Length: 249
Length: 275
Image (cartoon, rainbow over all chains, first blue to last red; front, side, top):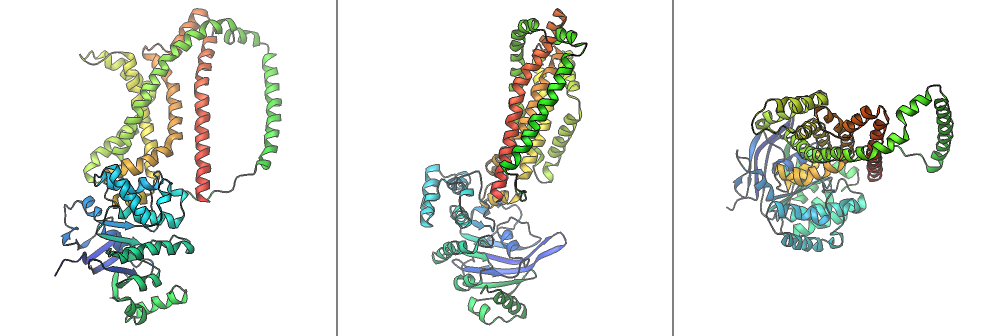
């Protein structure tokens, strides 16, 4: 059997005395789209931050295409090149143009020439309808545009895995669609993705698999139709009922 | 990110207090001026401090001597910008390995901020050349630059550090998540933003430094203050000191205004981006 794109085994993470992740097991195949759902504080964001080693873990193992990335002495910078992450608050670099944001890591980390990095950035910007924003600074862009640039910035490193941390939660409702459209297109293109989201409609239609996190564990997982239509765990049912009550599904 | 600011007063709302302030200022200083000029000792003060003849005779020499002060602070400022940044970066290095480096940086900033500048200038300007160590320069100008650099780098490193710490950790997280090393994140993402933020306080420290260049006259550097002193004792008149004061005002007041303008501009920008 081929190695999974990512395999997480027995992952524990706490902040001080607060245990946020309490034994996560998760396997993501190549080209698979996995959505993480669950209440705020259930550990979705922390799990994503652990996956690209932004947070040190207490116990467990994470392998990326068979490579143990939690082993001691691993070069975290090399690991992070292979994993793209997009944050809720965009986190674009405000002192750089859109092009500068996108070409920084390819030139400085991968050692690409400026021309090569620029050409690649322009191709990506064109693909997502942002080419005319090339020379703008982030504060000139709408939230939706900023988030799409942030996605392009991560894609410019040609990662083998993309992580999305509630990327539409900080957006005005009318700007959410354009960002989700980009992610849909990536899914259609076969990108392996782990997506923490509160957009249940999106998760249902885009995910190959949905994981419900509760209290730091994956309480229930399965195909979206099964999770959303016939959840087996009472906690999952309660969570989805609250979502429906809030008209988010 | 800064919180929302209360809205500023409108232009109309500001104008009336300005007019009142203007009127009361004219009345106040007019009265004060009248009292001073008509005071019994005024004639003596005028000959001793405001002698036009002495002023005309002494000013060119002092402006020339001020070249030494300018040279001094231009060299020192360039060095301070580099040394201060280095200390700030050393102090923000994470991890247990760098503990001694951090301690060193902290001891340095504490020490040189705690000591009077004159003391450092004397110790280095007289003390070190007095050791007569071969190969060590005994030029007072050299030690003056060293003393001012050591003194002001301590302040400036704290300014840099405040700037570095004001950049939200999410910026570092974004940089590191792209595979940039700690140093690359600092150089390309954190520092450019931090430095931009601390330009006004840096200018403030440099105003202080420019004034403190007169301290080095104590170790034998002939600059504007020493020149004024020489002229004062030759002419038995204090006007040269006022000439020196005027030269400083011409330099430092515009710089102080520029600093305040930069601060005000940053503030209004912050208000706009929070809107």
